[in-house]
Amino acid sequence: MALRAAAVAALVVVVWAGVASAAVYEVGDKTGWTIMGNPDYAAWASSKKFHLGDTVVFTYNKQFHDVLAVSEADYKNCNASKPTATWSTGNDSVVLNTTGHHYFLCGFPGHCAAGQKVDIRVASSSAAPSESPSAAPSPTPSGGTTAAPSPHPNAAPKALSASSVAATVAASLLSLAAAVLA
Ligand SMILES: *[C@@H]1O[C@H](CO)[C@@H](O)[C@H](O)[C@H]1NC(C)=O
Ligand SMILES: *[C@@H]1O[C@H](CO)[C@@H](O)[C@H](O)[C@H]1NC(C)=O
Ligand SMILES: *[C@@H]1O[C@H](CO)[C@@H](O)[C@H](O)[C@H]1NC(C)=O
Image (cartoon, rainbow, N blue to C red):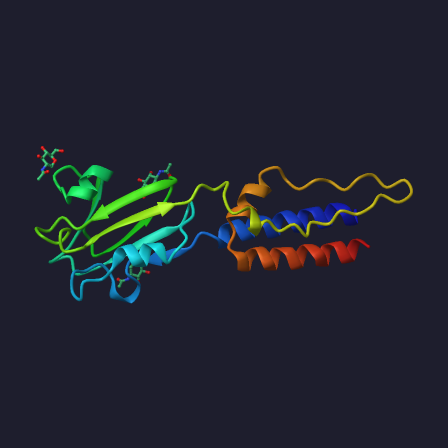
């Protein structure tokens, strides 16, 4: 009974941690998406660690800017003639739902060449083994008790993508569950 409850609690925590790890980033932070002041979007992107399911928000004056998703070659050449997707509301949320590079630029003449372009790389979800909450309870079967149920098989990848804060919280709650079991 207690084992079952602990396993359910652990699963809930792990799923919650997976949800909590879906971060929202404003491109350029407070500066937004612009050419004013020559923001360094490469520096901005390299200061973050993007994960699958995260969202990037482009905030800008739509009279002067837009957002185009482009190929790597078009990104390098600032070629806006064949975007794979276009946004132009001035407040555009883009969900990063594939791993690898996501290339964006402003399609207004000269803006990309002036630096209004960003390469957002989403890390493979199998990375970051150090963030694994390894504090999972491993109760030693005493007497006739059966072995503890192993965590949900889907739990591990979600936990791996969790932020370290979420992982820490999950780990402490898991040890709490372990304490209850003992
Ligand atoms: C932009 O790309 C299009 C098609 O992909 C190509 O025809 C055109 O020459 C390119 N323009 C520049 C300036 O590279
Ligand atoms: C942008 O859109 C989000 C919802 O998609 C909203 O919460 C936010 O207030 C909007 N920001 C601006 C500046 O309009
Ligand atoms: C990925 O995101 C794009 C744009 O945000 C959306 O159109 C597309 O349906 C999404 N794909 C999946 C598999 O969720």
